[in-house]
Image 1 (cartoon, rainbow, N blue to C red):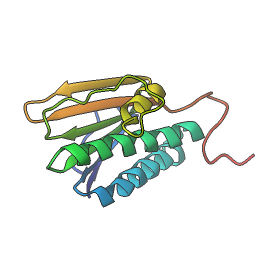
Image 2 (image 1 turned 30 degrees about the horizontal axis):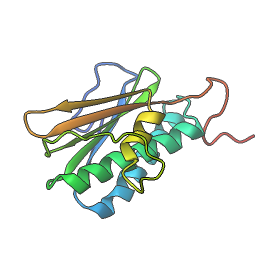
Image 3 (image 1 turned 45 degrees about the vertical axis):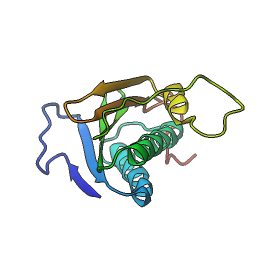
Length: 157
């Protein structure tokens, strides 16, 4: 995995904007993509003081896992993952070189597997797919805080 954070070749135009990116080449690196998301959200909360609910922590890792898994499964080249905090949500963006857009299957409780995009769309505030000059870019946003004064990951009760 190759990783670049704000300040390492990236400059933010907004002082509260935070992001991290990584490139992933193998299926073994899917766990590294989840770890990057967990570390990023931990820093968002601890360093920048933004609330991150336990639900958001889990959902972002799930979305990252599903999107990176699909990219690694269907594209021959590495995929790029970017996590960016914007408007009270973390935007998960995955780019890969495969030009074929994903298809979301109709709900079918008897189908085994291929529910990843259904799940992503169910847990995200927004979901977008864009064809790029090379490949495609998928963006999904997960709200960070369930309740501004409520459930926050890592809070001791």
